[in-house]
Image (cartoon, rainbow, N blue to C red; front, side, top):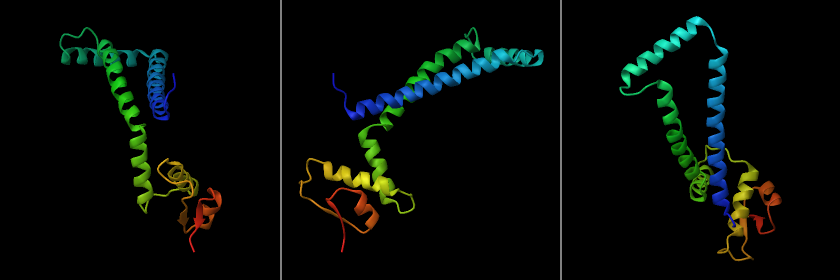
Length: 147
């Protein structure tokens, strides 16, 4: 089965999010198991008792947290997948290029020009004129210096 570039990007974004959530959970558990100080354990017990009073019907605060992590994680992964879509990425690039305050590297500008020339709607012999000689030199022959 062939996957589109957009689908692969969305899968990578979701995977990165799940990995970071897992790393955070593992790190938190490691810190709590390493801290066996009596005062800290009493403080955790008091926090647990307070949460148990606030959240009626819950048997422990850990059950609530463990039930919430997958729901929040899935929602955040969906948001990350949407932000990795081609349409959202194109809108972000367009906004960055149009904003004179946002710094855009010459390589990024060259990539935008090359992508525009690679569109099937653009004729093969189409040229794009630019004012930057460095940009004209690092792109294809269809990008020329304006005179």
